[in-house]
Image: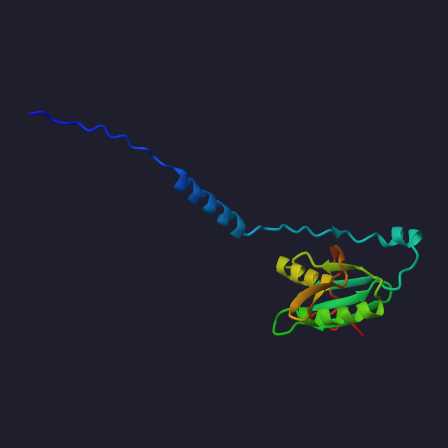
Amino acid sequence: MRVKHRETEFELDLTTFINLMVVLLSFLLISSVVREVSVLQVNLPANAAAAAGVQPKKPLVLEVMIYPHDLLVADRQTGPLKDIPDLAGQHDYIALNTYLRQIKTQYPSITDASILMLPDTAYDDLIHTMDAVRYFKEYVGANMIHSALFPDIALGDAPPAPIQGGNHAP
């Protein structure tokens, strides 16, 4: 008996597979989230003695001091402006932002502010304070936009709290 061997050639068609990969790759590239890394420009406060001889006196030198139980807004030239006590055991960033908006309406040309903190200030408190000082949220129609308050921020060490638990401002 004779066995017939069939010679069959298989042709591998990769066109469909390549088309599928092109579609998947383009879908993944379009739908991927592009991360944006933002870097904040932060300055050190100028030395008061060096700055006094070089620059004319500003109408306001804004300082926001972070203490354990309150936030203190002050003018470096005239002293404390407002003491914002904690609300429910946490800093009241909304009240800080609202008060800074009032200051911005009085001094629209001022863009710089110093944030002064104690050495043991939590990083989260610093970031929330910086956000409250830098901008405020505003709704225009259905869109929320960030408007600038005092975007030029300098960091420094706060003086020790004169009175524990607040009441710095007159």
